[in-house]
Length: 204
Image (cartoon, rainbow, N blue to C red):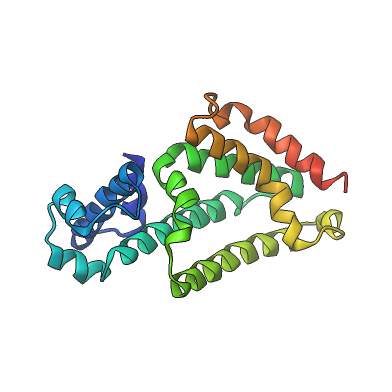
């Protein structure tokens, strides 16, 4: 249900109904069978769409994969932007970032799994598009940090290290939860993970 909500946010309106339906069924196919082994015909059968409709909207299977991936990144970024918009102060901001990352993962577990597994299936052109989108996401976060009155607390931390320190442990736990290696929801540990992220930034 939440996966449909995400697609509705990105591709709204009745005219995009078939596109949303194809993407939702393709996501299920990719997660159940693997991206490489899923065929266009299987997606057609699940979604009720014709081969022509799929090629019209996506050109090929990689087009479906890349649109799912970029849609997830876009939604995650937009939700993070809204979460941070009115937050003041680094410590509160870090806590909000961790909470948002966990909440998005719990609300959209299929898309979260897909983000972790899909990237090796892209062409160099799609990889470049993903890198540009990630750079924009990161730049927004860095701009928010620079606007905070206590931003100097992080001035000795290289930007390329910052994201690993903040999100790394949370991302690792979320991956373990999504794969079934741990059973406790990451929501249960969000306060500990937020404190851990803040502590790591202040002990370097």
